[in-house]
Length: 78
Image (cartoon, rainbow, N blue to C red; front, side, top):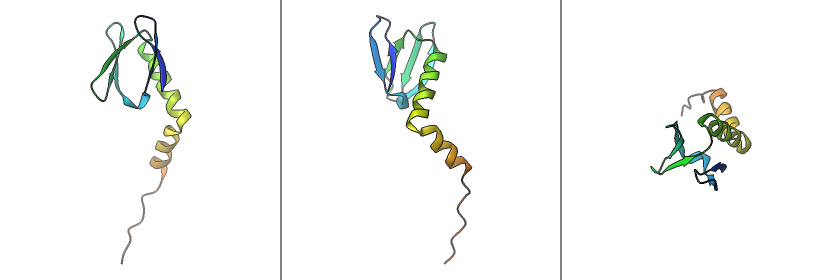
């Protein structure tokens, strides 16, 4: 979860994995994978940084890099 701020100044915790798009319209609009839209005070690049830090902390980035660097399994013959 990442902490962002609603337009009324109240904090909100958002599941970073569910963020599909981040737009500045000029306020920042988060669109989640379920279609829900949330306006926040943070700039888009700040939200991207929060998401990147979250992914690093939970190990998601390392998992992706490891899977990209792994060799393809050799074919198994019977």
